[in-house]
Image 1 (tube, rainbow, N blue to C red):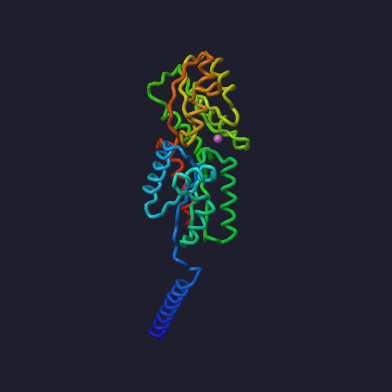
Image 2 (tube, helix red, strand yellow):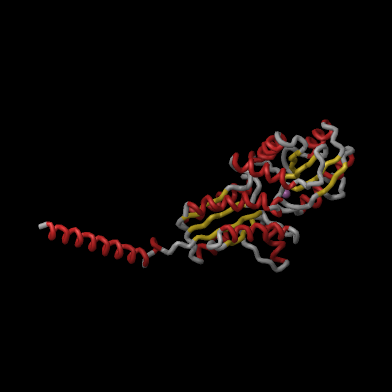
Length: 295
Ligand code: CO
């Protein structure tokens, strides 16, 4: 009796196992069980400046080293820059084209990583694109990673990156003025929020923006109030492109260097984008890990 029972239990087990195997084989030949193929899409505004290539290569290398098994692709959101590059013989995709190509190539899971500094207008446009591909069912999963400054944990890491990348020759009574991009988008508030947190540790570090608040007038007034005689000027943008070279460090009447010099503040310029420093790049690259962990 006991032997018989053992037999039937064994039989049931074997049958069950056979069914599971058959089930797997079935899934393997059909769409649903399509072999998992994850990919990463890095999305930047783009830049036609040759020097910006340093930043992009640095991000790409770090991404490949951190996620060696996942292919990496690029897209630029700015069509003006894409057209400019195309004329120079360099073909770069928009996020829409890049994602279509990835769908065609059989990618099933895509981590889209924004290389923006804040979740502004461009980031939200990218979110719409990602949402479109999601509702089309182009991939099993498509997730958009956060930009540089997002959670409070990010803010603390960015603060550390700012403090760590200030040139060592800078003396404590000299100011450091970072130039962010700025935007009409409500996310513009991140710049002042970041400045507040940095100043809790180093009160002579300031963050202004070219196209938002606080602008250079506000920053100049703050420096004068503190009787600052010398400042370091650094871009707070991923690449040291047109804004950094001209609006920040140019010789024109309205450049930050000219305005501050006229206000009696000596300027020392650093022309390096945030994406050239590992301190910042690591934050973007770590953001890719969150979507990947859901795949
Ligand atoms: Co701009």
